[in-house]
Image (cartoon, rainbow, N blue to C red; front, top):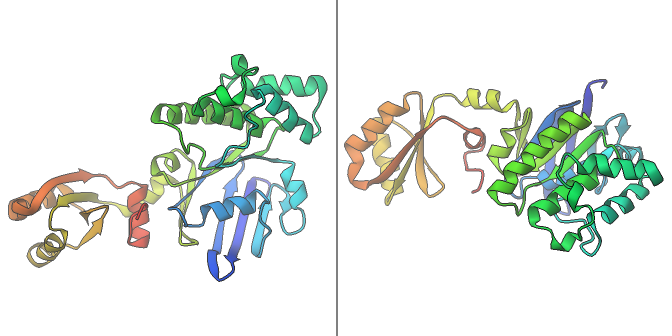
Amino acid sequence: MANISVEVEGVSHRFGPVVALEGVSFSVAAGQMFALLGPNGGGKSTMFRLLATVLPLQEGRVTVGDFDLRDRARGARAILGVLFQHPSLDRKLTVEENLWHHGRLFGLSGKNLRRRIGEVCEPLGLSERRGARVEILSGGWQRRAEIAKALVPHPQILLLDEPTTGLDPAARRDFWQHIESIRTMEGCTILLTTHLMEEAALCDRVTILDRGKEVATGAPADLVAGVGGSVVTVVTREPGRLIKLAHQDLGVEGHRSGGGVRFDGADGAALVRELNGRFADIIDSVTLAKPTLEDVFFAKTGHGLNE
């Protein structure tokens, strides 16, 4: 366990008759940035709540740092920083007042707490906004303040639940730049949940969840390499007919995906020429691309990430 920050073994969880997690296992090495990737309802939020000790374990084993959550959840809380999906700041207080009250909950006070607030605000660009009330800040600045709050108690492990929810593309880019800077400066392990493949691709390792089950775990590049080949996506007014004709005439299998038809093959360029040559009358557009984490998800589950 010396180099492992989080270890999850055979975790299952139910809400009445509903199975939210079923036999999920993965581990996160110290200093890594790790993502739980999956669709809404895939089990990410339940796993996050278990790791954050908001939910009690029902089945399996989870170790956070040196703490087994079955009997030492309180100890684990002392080494965690948690950024929930929904805002947790008091909007009527200033940024500094929010951070001050949070630090006091972890036993910090006086000069040490004041110094720590300065340390977490500086890399996030919050120094000049420490005295601003949260309610007047934009969504992006509020999210930065949420991160600062999670960092105040010097966490060894930072948990982020869908951290860029509600942010525009520019704010998302800024957010990830700050997260990478924080990882370098604070030396903490980062574990996040997301349904966005481009965010998961930024991480060192990913576990993909679907319908409560782990379907793949590994470095993003390794998972994508395992899919291989290329992906051809066709926009057509007659997807059913195209799938049937492509199978009959070309011997290739097509699948409905995101309102279009996708084909996987070793030689995507040749397949594009074949499709355009034979079925141009029912094809509106064709896209040829290299596989992504979304294609890994499709290959493992048979359906798209957002379907």
